[in-house]
Amino acid sequence: MRTQVAIVGAGPAGLLLSHLLHLNGIESVVLESRSRAEIEATIRAGVLEQGSMDILNEAGVGERMRKEGMLHHGFELAFGGRRHRVDLTELTGKAITVYPQHEVIIDLVAARLAAGGQLLFETSEVKLHEVDSAQPSVSFVHSGEAGRIVADFVIGCDGFHGVSRPMIPEGVREDFQRIYPFGWFGILVESAPSSDELIYAQHERGFALVSTRSPTVQRLYFQCDPQDKTGNWSDDRIWAELHARLEHNDGWKLKEGRIFQKGIIGMRSFVCAPMRHGRLFLAGDAAHIVPPTGAKGMNLAISDVKLLSRALAGFYRDGSRELLDSYSSDALKRVWRAEYFSWWMTRMLHSFADASPFERRMQRAELENVVSSRALRTALAENYVGDF
Ligand code: FAD
Ligand code: DHB
Image 1 (tube, rainbow, N blue to C red):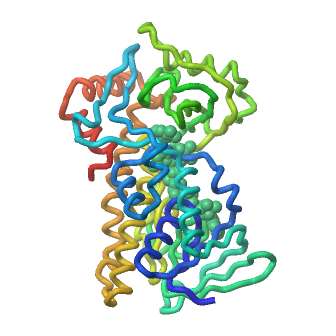
Image 2: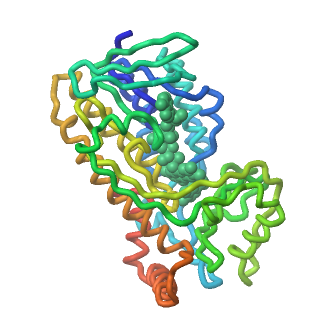
Image 3: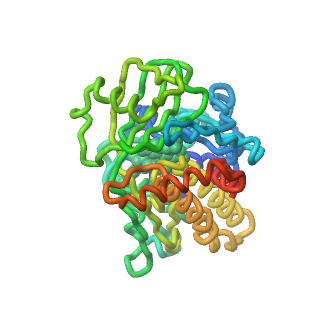
């Protein structure tokens, strides 16, 4: 089989790239190891920056997002028994939208299939070949049959554990990494939202986050041991922990409901540079990971793909390689700023078991500074809405 662009991975990065290329008259094939049902049901990110919404709208896949997404003009920082609002719109003129990642996936899969796009689900043994030659290819097994796609370019959108990044030889690429000594316990709850806006809470027992998914489903997270098991956490124990971290004496109460999903995610910061080797380009989590505290992961995947689709469109339009050549450094500029922001939010809001009493006071002083200074709140808000 021959195509112009072979894409490995049908996450937000791979699917959106395939669709943007299609809108530019460029043919692609997407290879995905999981089933359509599985990718459409995996619960992950929730927050979309305005810039991400703009790209999804421009790609013609924003109709449900505009209808069902929940626009948020601010969020709250809770610490020391009080909640402090960060007014995103007043500080930046922008807002964010809560629209779950799996809904973005459902919209993108539908759009690709309606346009006759080639998505091969449940492919296995995906291997990349000769990515630094003029004719890279990808071999795989699909429906029990071995196949091979020869392409002009191969794009690795296969997430952190994918097969693409290791194709950049170790001597060529540099990996930067920090693994955090905690994870997030995430639950989905059948209940109306406890709060109109997200609440990011710093507490001596650990971080907690109140988010939402729909008018009838809440998304809640709390800092935990990354090695812990969901089986160790009964519903009663989860609620006791969340009440302790989130409620103060101001009368606000967390709404309880049936918990219908529990999961634990580890947290790391990671960057691979460069994000290109020959005709292999990486986008999204395949090239970088942020801890979820700043809600940047899916947004970074989308902004990588915006750059890459423009670069590929330029190449197919008039043979221009300029944007392809600058893709890695252009993308990494935004990636490093988002890495910094996510690391900063993580450090400011989580409990570190080895922090000295002095470091704990510094953490509190930093939060006090942020909520008392319009300049610092503006910097936080600009980063959160993605104004960079
Ligand atoms: P992925 O979504 O990981 O997609 C990669 C795809 O490649 C997968 O479907 C995988 O099955 C497939 N694949 C892997 N290996 C192969 C292979 N060998 N062959 C074929 N296919 C393969 N981000 C935000 O922006 N905002 C948030 O609020 C936010 N919250 C989060 C909360 C949680 C609990 C988690 C876990 C993440 C969160 N993120 C958030 C991060 C966000 O989900 C990711 O950054 C995003 O999914 C990255 O998209 P991607 O397309 O690069 O990779
Ligand atoms: C959600 C996830 C985040 O990482 C975050 O910072 C805010 C919200 C969510 O899943 O709703």
